[in-house]
Length: 388
Image (spheres, rainbow, N blue to C red):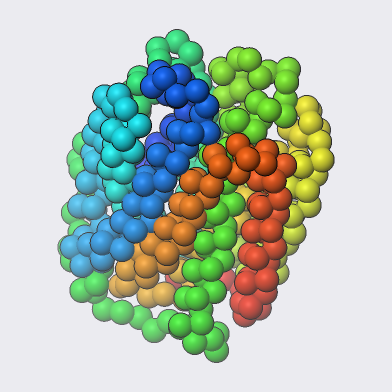
């Protein structure tokens, strides 16, 4: 168990991690205008490097977390993300922007394979711990939506990167002060026997990776298009970026609390049953969203985001359930590298899909992705999550 400041900063780190990856998607229209680009869709592909490195960077980050130390890596995370965000604010061309976002992706890649395994070390209720952490991460999305909208409206898109960047560096300093030094790196500790419930490790890792990849695709499709999607579906607020940001923030805040419910149930309910139930809600909510506009669409958006957020804790829960702590960062890093690397294609696809066929086709792709997740998750063993 960690002291309270360390636990708080680890959860704040998750919020910051997701917030920084969404600032661009929220401010993309203003950035495109500043760069002299006619359509925001044409600028979206330049952010794909951020999400690619967010995934592939998980491998070295996870390895260093296990072999060198998770505390040191988290200090690098906070300060690195902050400096990279400030760097993005100084860009003036799409190519410079892509480079800056790539550096930001490298820095943000540290959190998931390092911060979450560090947080659940010695946790008596790992499901609940993961749920609270997931809530914190998704509140970061809400913060990005409302804060970026306000900063863009009153101070310009560059300050939307600068101010959070400075905040992250300050968090890094506080983490270095309050987090106790590790006596030894996780990989050098004595391992404990794990249980795979009769399933081979390769098969388990394959299921985890595919399910995580499809889930990450849905996450990227939704969070990186929700701002423009809400603008197109809700004409009453479409002309005010701050109002759109506020409405989207409400969606993210309310949907994020699904993580607490899932975290509570993960310690008590069969994982496969719970996971499949969440995916079924995704499927029908996305179909409803494709058929509606205005307030009805807004309600459907809240429902499908609640289900998409609700699916997030399952990958980390499987890591805690089946993988020993001495190698959780490395296993998590390998899984994330594949799943997030593949899902980075979703960010690249948003602009071309919407430009060529509209948001209806984009939502259709999301429905198909949800079906793939359901099929893969059905291969999991019907066992409850146990203590780590």
